[in-house]
Image 1 (tube, helix red, strand yellow):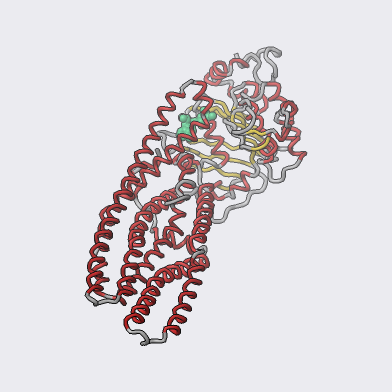
Image 2 (cartoon, helix red, strand yellow):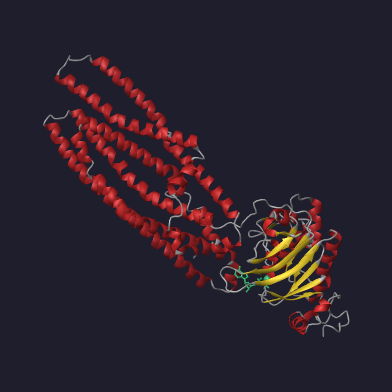
Length: 613
Ligand code: ADP
Ligand code: MG
């Protein structure tokens, strides 16, 4: 799996600064939350103190009746109670606002990092499997105790706890400083424990998130490959693969739970022992008359009030450590180098020429070049056929021409301008690309075709459907253009999918088409109709077509023969036929049509051209 690399565990950013940046996007909300937090703590701490005042007043009245005007003091106390009660009412909004803010942050972070992911290139998507990306943008963000929970609820609960502890301690110091110091004994122990365990917490949680990523990657793979799994009847084998990743997740989740339970227990016991000590000491002082009953009551209440905040503060660090893992995983996505964009991209007019000059390309994880030192020029309206053995770099060349795979060395230039300085959008706007493996999005047939166009219209849709030879199919679908296609749509054959991809490319009204092997989707007669429509569609519509069918070569001006990523020949079909290796390839791999050769449409209708045999 991608993120098991050792560097994944190293923090990538200053986490506090990262949180500051996210917070700074919602300053009013954060300020409001701070205010409510402090108010809520102040109200909570005020109650025991009011209780003490009430008890002291009662004690005074019982011990020395008539020493004070009871009604005036009770009235005053009552007013204070009402004021504190109103404050409490406002503060009770606090948990609700925290919940809403969590969702706001979750949405903001997901949108931000999703945009970053969209800006990445092929290298990014080969490095991170899609299930892993999905986990980082979903599971890592929501719910307790993940990142967005931590950003608001986590931190503000801790602020509430810290302020409560601070207010309690202040009140306790006012009541009796010796008892207060005694109650501080467990604090250093708790902090020490956190420091000893923090690396363990980070690692355990990191492993848990990686396990979740692995499951999602497997899930994604099984759903997209479910037909193959069924066809090969290897459900059992797959179940075994799946149980492995599920088991890893179970183990890591148990490790997280174990760590949490043990830490929580230790924290609780430290606090418990301290509390028992304080009750004895405070009780003794009250009995000896060193402190009033009201003071003992307030002190005892503060102490029991302190337990949960004190237990909660280390939780902040624990959940913080987890959230930092989530931040690092997001930043790992963001930090992956973006494709370099020119500072001042040159907008492109009509494409006149596309030139490759000594272009080489290597896939990062593969030794050797997929394309080597390729040089050729394609003029406006020119039609190029690309042939060659499997793995010779035909698809790679198409993606390089599209500007998706930037060459490792050499240059691609359009109208004489290096593609690296060109505004890629304005270049790709003019290109219709039909990939070797057609992919349709979940949606209607019409949406899929319109996807290609900036200004879709009925006329354009009709034209595209007709050119791609899809008219008959359209009639056979019960829901017509509203037929659902894609992953959750009707079952389409590979050929139908690819013809839809052809229609999508034509709906772009491109100036240049890149067909990566459409042999399987169109028979020779349909191919001929498509070619005729392309002639009628637009003057000067050029294309590069990868093909395994000899008859395709009759529609192209020049043929590029690729072998091992190198251009072994580039010229007209007739010129190349002069080469024995070219003839041998045609006969061996395109033999089915070799009897006809280019210039003919149906097998056996034309005499065999002498040059082919
Ligand atoms: P063709 O389309 O001519 O069959 P490709 O352009 O698909 O050939 O592949 C050329 C070479 O690059 C092959 O050796 C292939 O294995 C390799 N290759 C293609 N795509 C990838 C990829 N995404 N990652 C790594 N290697 C790849
Ligand atoms: Mg290919």
